[in-house]
Length: 237
Image (cartoon, rainbow, N blue to C red):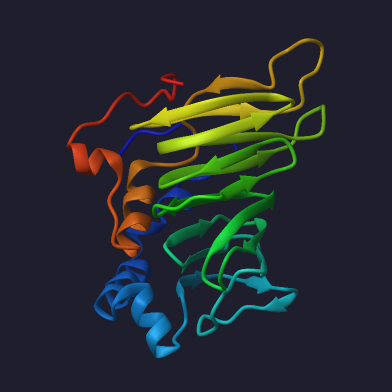
């Protein structure tokens, strides 16, 4: 497994793809035709729910379907893996986010992360964003990891462009990130003349997480396609 640095997380949160329950659920998901099959058969687009989660304030059941416009919250020691349109998501414990609607009910135009962390893989498309209180990322076809942290100034965002092209904005600054293997930044308010976008190392996520989410939507990561990886520092930003 790829190396990773833990910062406020536990190994078990990153190893969800090794659980027998996920492997069985992913196999069943793939055998049933993934998301296309779910839409055609009106079955759930939740691949796995472990622990407790709510959707729009109501307890979420594994047989429900999530859709754009929903506010989704995971509880302690909980994890949620699901797909909408050509995108797949893994919400870590104690995470709150909204998936806002685009041109259709299955098109996510904006993932608004309020608290916690999410791993996400997006198929090709345009006019889509991830937003937190301190950072905005315009994404195309890409895989990313986003996590909110509290600090003395209120909040900061850890964002890793694991692969793809991302337009980053924070504190009035803008940068273009083009990555084939993990480019990470901190995004926060620009205080005391400091930059709002600063390089960060690879923390709290792994290659295997991105690979398993990509597989759910019939896709592959950039390093799977090229057959080569970079370093694990995130410093190529």
